[in-house]
Amino acid sequence: MKKNSCKEKAIRHMLYIIRSRVTKLVIVFLLLPTLFCGCGRKPAAKAGDLQGNIAVSGAFALYPLMLRWADAFSQQHPGVTIDVSAGGSGKGVTDVLAGQVDLGMVSRDLKAPERQHGAVAVAVARDAVVPIINIRHPLYRQLLRRGLSQKVACGIWVTGTIKTWGQAAGVNSHALINVYTRSDACGAAETFASWLKSHQEDLRGTGVYGDPGIVRQVANDPYGLGMCNISYAFDDQTGRPNEGIALFPIDTDGDGRISKDEQFYASKQSLIKAIQDGRYPSPPARQLFVVSKGKPQNVIVKAFLRFILEEGQKYNIPAGFIPVHEKQKVRH
Image (cartoon, rainbow, N blue to C red):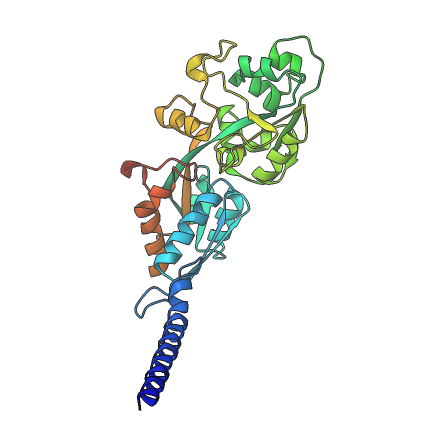
C-alpha cells in the first residue's frame, strides 16, 4: 500500500508540474502582443478619435521638423496619416493654392500675389540660412579668421565683381570661387538674397536642387561656396558641421575679421543661441511658416495646426530650430 501511495504522489506531482508549465506557456503567448506593441508601431485608433489624411509639401528647411511633428501627432491620433514631402517653398505655396495638399511649408514671407489668391501663413519656427565652404580649402584658416561680409557676399553672388578667393580672403590668390546657388524656387535662396538687398533670381552661381544638393556640391569641391539651411549644415547626432563642410562666419560689423562675439558656428546649439540673442543677422535668420488656402476648415488639419503651435513647439530646439513666441504666431 505504501508503494502505491508513493507512486500516486509522484504521478500527482508530475501532473502538477506539467499543468504549471502549460499554464506559463499559455500566459506567455497571451502576453506576446502586449510585449511587442508600441515598438515603432502606432497604437490602435479608438472610437471617436480623429480619422483621415493630411498632405503637406514645401520648404526643405521645415521638412525635418515637420516629420517630427507628424510622427508625434500620429502617435496621439493613430487614425490620422500625415504625408510630408519636400520640394521648396515655391512648390509648397503652389500645391496648397491648387488644392493638392492641405498645408504648405514656406521659409520666406508670402508674396502679394500669393496672399491675393488666398494663401494664409502662420509662423511655426525660426532658423537661418548660412554660407558654407569646403574644409579642404587651401585658404581655410584665413577665411575663418576674416569671415564673409555683406559687401563681399554681394560682390560674389549679385554683382559678380568678386571672382577669386584672393579677393574674398584679402590675400594673393587667383583661385576662382565656384559659387553655388539654388535652382528651385526656395525660401533659403530668397532669404539669403534679402540679406544682400536682392532677390533669388538675381543670385549668380551654378544652380543646384535642394539643400542636400548644395551641401554635397560644396563638400566635394575644395573651392566651392554655397548657402543652406542650418538643419542641413549640421549633423543631427553630433551637432557639429556635416562632413566636408564648415560654416563661413558672417562678419556682421564689416571690420574684416571675426571677433570673439562673432564666433558661434562650432555647433548647432551655439548658432541657435546666437540667433535667439540676435547676434546672427536677420536676414539670413528668418521665420518659417505653415500655409493654408484660407482659414482651415478641416477638423483634422485644425487639430494638427493647434498641436504644432502648442505642444509641438517642444520639438523645435531638439530638431535644431527655434520656437516661436505667442506674439509671433500671427497669420499673414
